[in-house]
Length: 178
Length: 376
Image (cartoon, rainbow over all chains, first blue to last red; front, side, top):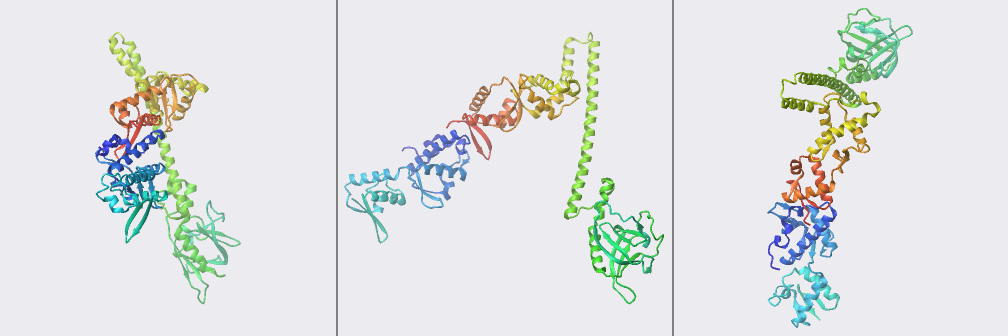
């Protein structure tokens, strides 16, 4: 991803009607499509893995100072609900304040990680979360620096398949891939 | 002041109600004994009525300044003392021609003085006789000195007051309207005399001037307006035809659409006198469709009624607007109204239609509602 600005991800971001929930249902569908892809592209670019509704007003895609527009909370809820129905976010709490952003589905993530481990011959080795997420070896991997919560969620997926075992020791969390 | 007592037939007035009654009550003029002993006393919202077998008399509550109790003594039972004002009203015939005392005393031989005193004092505070006094004599005499008070009676009197003022303003408004009609008639007469004069002096004026003069006159009014008298049962149908012929040209100027209220103003200005009512306009408008006229009534989705040319092409209109918005990049209803010369409400209607159609989309911000080409 070469883009660094939101407006490069989607030119819609500079289009004022983009920030008004469209009453025409056909138009609204297309508008929400555009919003979902913009948010996922942005999160992929910035490696944003969690989203807190309380900080929604600081989330860069949700406002555009250049054209002086921002989303109201109602519209944000509509977008989040749309993302959830598409399986692109998962709520972490019942009150729906925090969520994981899945620009890749957990299954895809699991596959990616397992492939990387296998390619580097690390099956059977015990690794700490820290070295996998922030270590020098994984710098080139896509999962480098992703949110630990998302990482745990993906390892849960691998555990289900019997491809990894997660354990904790003295507060340090580790994983062994099989 | 026993001379304030007046003969009565004992009938209750409109709206008057009985509060309490007591037997064995004697009347004293001041402390002087009178002939009226051991009678039957009644307290109503308006007055005190005393009667025995031979006489009936009343004391209006409005003349009582205050009342108090004189306790029982060796010589008399408990007495109710009513201080009475001299008042300016002419004296009505009563049992006493004159009196040198300022008060009337009622002696309660059979008791009940305390209750009576309490109730009469309540009534003196409520002053309910004032309310009832309004009804028979209409609003003119009492409105000025009446005060609004709390409670249901207060609300009732307030409503009554409002009704009166409304009635007055309505009747004065109609007077104005009549005057207007009369003046309009004069205007038309003047314009007719001018026309006649022009015809007489045709040779003196150049043809150009005559034409200009005539166009002024035409813009003032319609020569022979359709009225209820001249058309009878066909009134609305004929009116519809007249409306169509007048509005057709106007509609062409205003982009093929005009709200009912605008049309109403234009029609009545064109008629000058024999004005039509909004109801007539609406009734006539309903007939337009069946008469196959070049103008028809249309109810916009917002509920606004408007006239439009029958040959107006909706699709073409929407396309035009979409194109216009495209060239302007974005537009508010205001701007569109100014550009096309149509009412804002109609402009807004068209923009939302185009939006529902999917050709426009909206931007609703603190700066107002604007419409953009639908790029989604």
